[in-house]
Image (cartoon, rainbow, N blue to C red; front, side, top):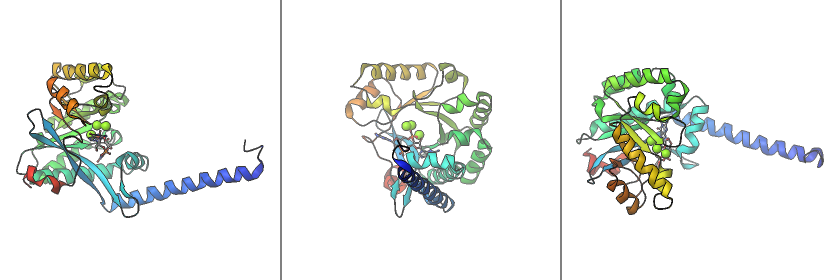
Length: 271
Ligand code: C2E
Ligand code: MG
Ligand code: MG
Ligand code: MG
């Protein structure tokens, strides 16, 4: 097409491509600055027990850029991974979240997302131990959320990391369960403490019979293996009723509480 329209069309295409590349570079530069200046902070979303009590919070990174406004993690986490910035970002969110949780007068759990890249490289257990020592947080109150890819890529290495983290007393949750490639055999070979059913299944409860069957089966599977089960993305009372009826241990979602600045939950945390 470009050929038949002559060299002019070709140049237009190059310019548009160039502009996009320029935009990507600017975005990466701003992201790097924001991470280096610690301008990306965690917000906190509550997790609830079946009796309605808050069990803890998940720390979710929020980037407030002066020009772009609030940037969603979906756009900056992949960019941080590509730009080699994720280790610094995750370390900052982990430390901030532990400092915050150590201030709470209630012994609530704090869950922190760890990038698969970060999990597979570097000394994660060593850095987690250092943060626990620095903040004085009870290790049993800390849960690290990882995704299925972690176990598939390098199972031996992942197993060693799991072992060291569990030896510290830290909990490990498998996030977005059902969306990855992991085989059932990973579930009992790795010392997981929590399974988080991906919100795509929760969203389809009451819409497709398959999602009802899958959600029910995952809850039973988790319990058969002695693993706690969490449902994420709960948006309707019907979804919540179903999950509680099926024995799902914890629920999380916009119906129950949004990710907000820590101060918004001070009445719950006691901080
Ligand atoms: P995730 O760990 O699965 O986190 C849950 C996501 O679902 C969050 O999106 C949360 O705001 C959203 N959510 C919670 N309840 C509902 C609901 O009822 N409905 C809908 N539609 N969404 C709900 P968020 O904050 O945009 O984060 C997206 C993803 O980015 C996270 O998914 C996590 O994988 C990643 N992420 C966030 N913070 C960090 C971080 O500090 N480090 C790393 N490595 N990844 C992070
Ligand atoms: Mg998560
Ligand atoms: Mg998730
Ligand atoms: Mg998710």
